Length: 203
Image (cartoon, rainbow, N blue to C red; front, side):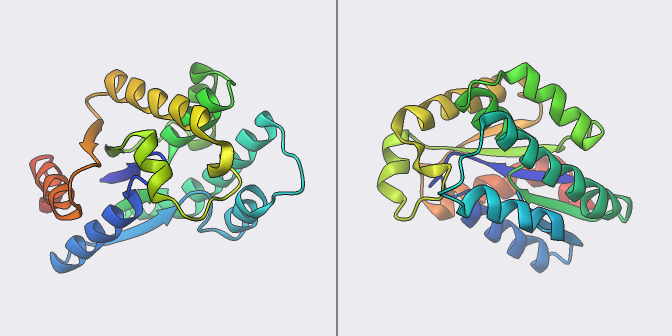
């Protein structure tokens, strides 16, 4: 099973991914964890360029293609082999991030990015995606340090959030909306309950 965690900045998806990994470990369920962009030599170089660089301008299309290059390498080198080995793959961001941030936020187009995602991943999609939803106001209150993309401001994050909610409606069989305003413990319990209902624990 391939499980991804999505959300705007400050949603707590990283915390929930970590708690989910602890759950898998306690249950002795084989897993790997990946983050985007990164987790390959090429991916980490791209991550540094995309998120830490503040001086070199990057066009929206170049930004998207860099994310897709990192994703293509990650699928080929890490994710696909792990799925073949029947491991649970847990991803901190995957295809939906590009659709929301670059497709909507950078105004490239949602359908255009979806097609490019399919090319980069050879059509691979998560079996289950937890979208942890918070308001933009909550996001801006929670975040203390912003990377290059996170620093785009209120309207950008609002556009990204709206895109995520659209994707959750469009792919409701895969994407589950989680109320990120609840406590960490409440969210974790809900995620585990959904995962077990989907048959994840039996793998």
